[in-house]
Length: 159
Length: 160
Image 1 (cartoon, rainbow over the protein chains, first blue to last red):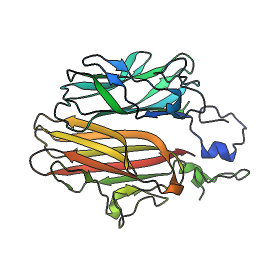
Image 2: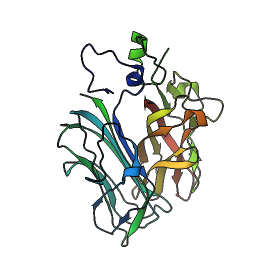
Image 3: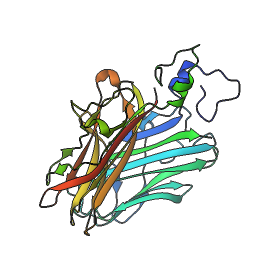
Image 4: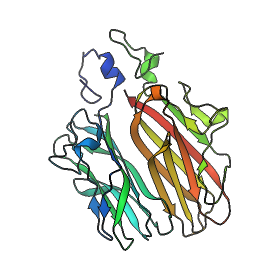
């Protein structure tokens, strides 16, 4: 099935293609991931965390942290992490392309009480072959903190 | 007018359908809403002017005005933002609720005297046949109540 970015001239789109025009990869889990204080680490997912991935951008067996788009284009990325209650004075979430930060959100979560969470979104090009994207997260509460929710998604918006 | 989720084989979309290809609901309310201290508050959009776009009537200005209730099952991208008057060194957070579950959250701890604001985005599945709905809740723990300066909420159907 074709998606935006793979349509060809003269192609007659099927109802399925019109009704699901965007290829995407949606990863989400409430399974906790432990974050050691003052140590950045990438978000990881397992195969069951793929809620949608028709073009196979996420392969848990190859890399549990990366989305690797298989078609060149412009992509929209969203990420979110929610921590269990902690008293960290600094935390950040980064969306990275090939290990380089392309978006970061940071906050002082020292008084956040029952909620400490970070979200970010960013658009980026991807070459459709080697470019990969992941989410890097950091907290410095002084102890290990587990996540209660992790989201990471990519949508191809255009060529 | 057909939209994503409603196209059928052998029926060419009209220009109007293609020009409104991504069905969505876009809400914005610049009116003040009181956020009671240390209490989750639903962000409401009760005025017709709050509906910047809502072609499929996913939002009501009379009933459950805090909700977006999509009528098409599929994957959605949702955004939310709340700007809050000075929270003076306290915590503010915004959370997206899908029915009764937190789908995404963003929080901050404002240590200065500037206005605070939090934003979030989410991509996920909505089962319209099950009555799934979305809403935003805001929280702060200042000693006294605070008010919103503006609040925004949107959902767009990406595909079925």
